[in-house]
Image (cartoon, rainbow, N blue to C red):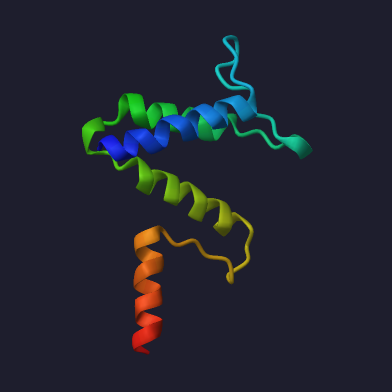
Length: 97
């Protein structure tokens, strides 16, 4: 759990810095090209604050799901994302096969 927090704090701090966190809008998350990431951060906040058992959340799995969702949104079936564990298993399977 401590390792997850150690990863998440800098990640979220950097993300808020890059997106321009402000006190009025919570996150002003408009990226170049007019892409608004506010709904994603709003969903993150709701999950963290309103989930029935927040201590059971695996934030790394949530982040991996976000990345998979972004790739799915491209419509390119050749794009994929592996967590470190999944990538290690993939490499091991390739070595065996």
